[in-house]
Image 1 (tube, rainbow, N blue to C red):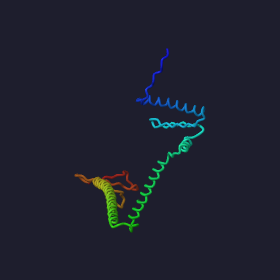
Image 2 (image 1 turned 45 degrees about the vertical axis):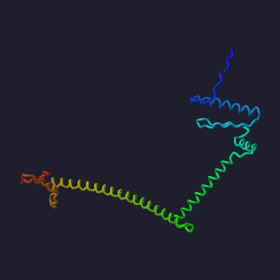
Image 3 (image 1 turned 90 degrees about the horizontal axis):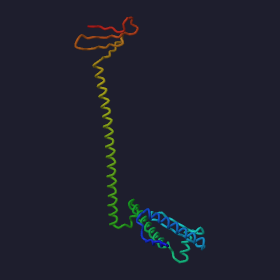
Image 4 (image 1 turned 90 degrees about the vertical axis):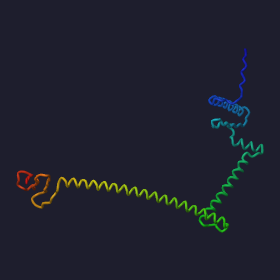
Length: 223
């Protein structure tokens, strides 16, 4: 019993994976047929495909190139595939040249050149444009100066704070030393005199020089 193959309905495949698989299979089949035409019939074949993913697939007979086939196509049909595109490119280039010429002219005029052909209104407009430019430049300059002043003031305050901390530390250390000891230069047989004060009798501790013939290094005198 023969079962007829069901006819496949030709419509867009919604599932992206199935669509890509079908594209790959049918592309390979078309390229295979193109290769058979090239070998069996000595034909020149070129096929270009663009998939939905943006990839370009191409087949061309080994005896030619895609460009050669396009040139032959234009020659035999007596058409120019690139003329319209070339004309658009030429028009675009012309417009760009005009824009470049006008910009150069405006630059010269802002420098005070090429002013003879300008009317009174254009000269007034040019003067206004220059004044606006100068105002913008001055404002930008003032902002830059203000920023430098703020930075400098912060630096000065930071250095003053560091100096203040150093000065306070020095004063505190000096006071602590004055409260606990007082160094006196005796210029005699003693190296130093240390006086301790309290509410009772004063006590003086004298340290002798090493050449003094005393059995003890320190001698205390009580008043």
